[in-house]
Length: 217
Image 1 (cartoon, helix red, strand yellow):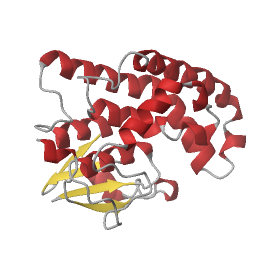
Image 2: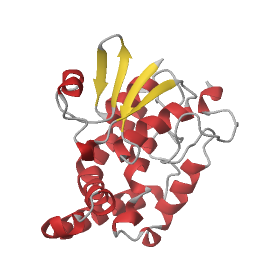
Image 3: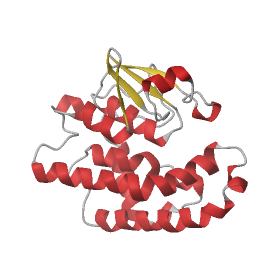
Image 4: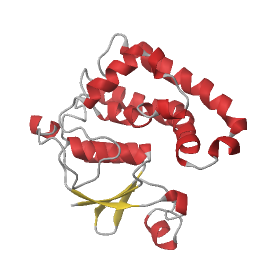
């Protein structure tokens, strides 16, 4: 069984929990509160020197960091991971986009405005740039989704999970998603995927017993 170190309200951590839920994969969740410095303890740094979550223990003493790398690991051999060379590359293309265009802006805004008490005052100087670049990233996604239901392979994949993680909380940090109807429709499609769980769901919570996407393998 996997052991997942994550923070409940972290978008990057949620990506992994969502993938595991969609795949109906059992795991043990260990909450790490980065706001309290729990990812900077000697014990945690011995597991992941970067001091970040999520972190997946894939075997005794063997750990995998970086949310999108973890997504590929857990989704391998399932419908969430495209098999063809071009579709894998397209999924990776959007996952790289998520990390350089979406997460540094919408993810940063979410962290400081929604999670950190007084964060808005502390980051006033950065907010304008986050908003401009975040809206730019959302527009790129909107343009793609005007003619595609998903981001790669014509179906739900790890690329959608990666992008969903912070896009679905953008409205909690000043972004107006109502101006992006294709994104809003895509968010609803993701949420209708068998096995979907929201960010606040925890292992052991009651959920719809509809088989997850793993049932399609």
